[in-house]
Image 1 (cartoon, helix red, strand yellow):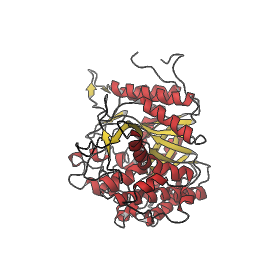
Image 2 (cartoon, rainbow, N blue to C red):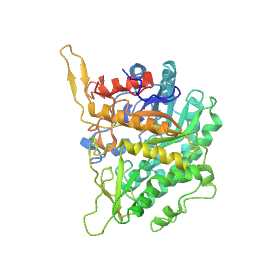
Image 3 (spheres, rainbow, N blue to C red):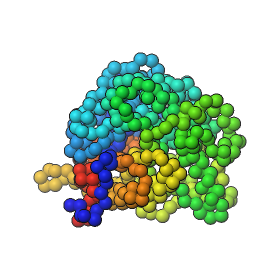
Image 4 (cartoon, rainbow, N blue to C red):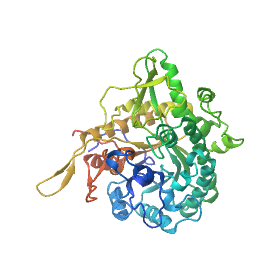
Length: 475
């Protein structure tokens, strides 16, 4: 049981879990859902581990009520999910698909019936393929279509959703999708990646405008960014950090929170694009007041200036599919970091989370924050007891979560306006290019039977969610 010395969070602090539509829902061709770029990408040979796809995933679409009961059994205060744009608008335009909206309406009602706060993300990477065929996020019209989609979602659910998140990790959508090729749609063009950055930022602003026009329950509005916590080394360390910080972090925080793009970012990338896709009035629309800024954190990143002679290291934590997610900065290399590491090869550094939260609080002191993703993949094994009960003993994940939740509490105690923590992920799922080879869930999913098994980390997290106090480990 928690001790008197265990860190405790305030009553209003949201302790929840997070998922994404394509990673868990399945039912890829059912009830009017159209194809997304991840359907296309995952069905393209050589793009995902073992050729895995999200066709079935965790079959959440068919197991909604049981999964809702599972969330309730864990005592979750909130659940962060994403809407599948092609389930609501199969081609990204036109009237809504009633069956798609009905699924999310039942999800939201089911959460409310179980006293779980609904946190809806409009976009977690599953762009309708029909829009990609017209240019995807390199096409300004996609941002405009996204605004209409936001309005449809807001009209349908805007009396019940408590927190709206426009985009999840636009860095990944832009740079991995259009620069490196590691994510759908798999393009490898630096200019296209930077164009996508702007159109995603614009889509956020347009979507918030539409949501504000139609929601009726006074919700909060947010965006979720995956921040890169950078460590520099060697001669020129500051320059290496500056360049990657501009691409990874400030390309989003500056327009979103300050209304402009960083001058150094534009200078660094001048040889790739002239940024003429930024039109008059765009930055004012992007610069919307945010009730919450979502923070995704998993690991730190170590960078240095490349000497140009040795083999350039590329340990940036992402699959190498031929392109680069760092347009304009080929002189920066990403250095391997000491362990321990997760199954993703990412280093474990809880201090990085605390540092990030304190830094954001210093730079944007009036901006409330919420940790929208934090978690780890490890090699999980199911054990079956003599009585037939299933268990997953994952002490590494329990330790990871304990240390990171404690780091978040330290930041809160230091004055950071931190409103919640969402573990990634509620359940094992389709891990994008890694298919089903990586397990992030606190709930194990047997993909052959769809059986759910609470891991030890879920039991630990249940105690945290129910009490608001960080449970000890090893006792």
